[in-house]
Image (cartoon, rainbow, N blue to C red; front, side):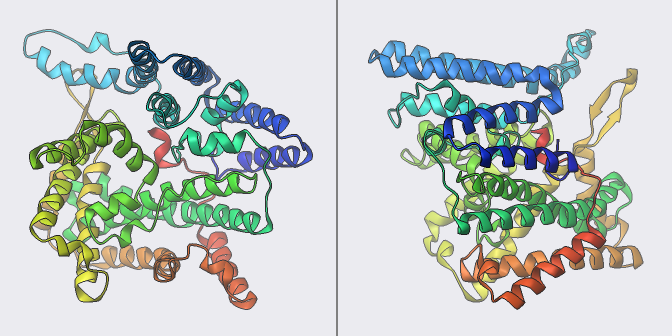
Length: 484
């Protein structure tokens, strides 16, 4: 059930009307929990058991952590939580990946490891809700919050349907208190929530899905792509993944806001970042901060020697890459960004002023350079081509696709009618997005459009609506991050 489908529209409308009719917030929580389980079951009801297991284990571990002061017992309890959550995540997400990686090695010994493969379906959103519920017990273990005794509230925290399958990854100390008290929706919150829903859907169906039609053919035909086509294809994918994922996050925040909940902002104009470190403070903020708080800092952060700091940065980004999926291209992507952040760290120690440029030509150059450093990463991220190998088995051919795209200059610049049409479509589809985000960046106000005078506001929404009607992709394409 996708946010950009009529099925979800009817589901949410029915849920929201009932939510408004029920005045008691406990009954509202019960309604939302049933709605959340139904939302997930619409994809595959069998995997509700995994959500329930994580919920029960972390609920019990949280209570027991509060009851005991024994350091040994507390370590056992938090270990149970971590092993349960990461065990489920690892089995469903990485088992076949490791088997496939072993096949080449054992094949040279005349052995066959393909029989070890299992036909596993990756549960939607497992990486998101696993990290969310696991942070609950980690925060209790670290003394940053107390456990909840209300199982209904905690179950809703784990399964809350607006952000269940693609985030943002919420912290219990921020979201659980909102579920443990009555909610009110102000007029301002309702309007801003509706804007987030509309803007998120517009980014998805008008920008992301149309840019996919530009990027996909280039990656499929990477061996024959010209230099300009390869560049425009990667640029289109950069816009696609941003609008697809940030669009989902905006919709999730908007849906929650008109019900009285406040979810964290997951994207903060990342392509206006002036350096790679700044980019990761703006992109997928809920995951970046999760990795910082529960991985980078526990590893030692920047408190040790420079070499230890570089190691911690590299490991954090490498594991962040693997979080995205069981594929080597995600590992290369994490390694690449780990090396980039190590380089940024080194430059900042030699020339600390380079991160402080916030205007003029230097700032523009930094933004331009950061964007293109990010583009290289998106090439690694997107290269997921699979081909038929000997024996009828599928194997990863992403490395060859990466090399073909990088070597596209050998096929010529390709300044022809096809490239010009790609460029025209890219600019036409992306121009309203760029204008809105430039205004948001310039004014530092993400709701600047809601503060315009009525004629300008009406004209703006009418233009976006016209583009939606004429160019929106209406078949309800899946969101990219559903696969993670």
